[in-house]
Amino acid sequence: MAHPPHQDGYLHAAAPALNGAQAARVGVSAACREVAEYAARFVSTTGDEHAEPGDFIAFGIRVRRMALELMFRTVTVERMRGTSWEVIADRLHMNVDTCIGEFGHADLSHHASAHGQIVWDVLAKTCINPIPGGCADTADEGAVELDAWYLRWLQPDNHPAQPPTCAVTANL
Figure 1 (tube, rainbow, N blue to C red):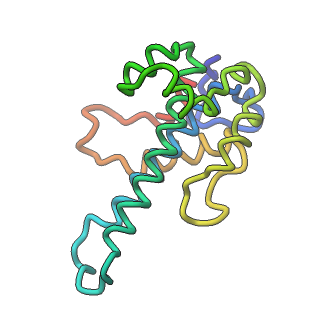
Figure 2 (tube, rainbow, N blue to C red):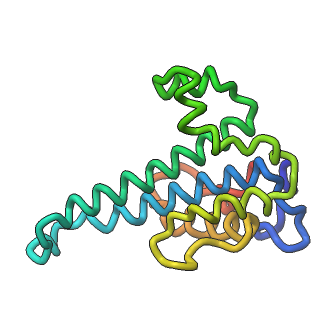
């Protein structure tokens, strides 16, 4: 169910709450943001002289863990969209049984039409924000935060036209 646009382009408390499938999609966007921001910290080489042995390995391990959580969340969204385990397994280059064994716990499709907070509460248990308490309390709040983050992140030359003011919430 798409939300009707608001004058300022953001969801408000009066807007309908997100359902489970929409909350899962916001969860993927939130994980993408966290991976991007964490990884961006290591682009600069200005602090390399202060790195301890193993610091780069620790960074790589953290990014790998974050990416794995992102993968679980993408499986959640795919299942909520009705994607079969056969397609998911094929895309992951796995057999179906192995895929279900590794990613079956991410199947929250039975909550797709439920209130989004049910799904958000499950995702919150594996929040990948490195700052404790850094994840939004609700999917609605997370979506609005992501709209604002996207506008801050977006470079002027990335968009030929006026950038969308609600790139995350626009099509939920």
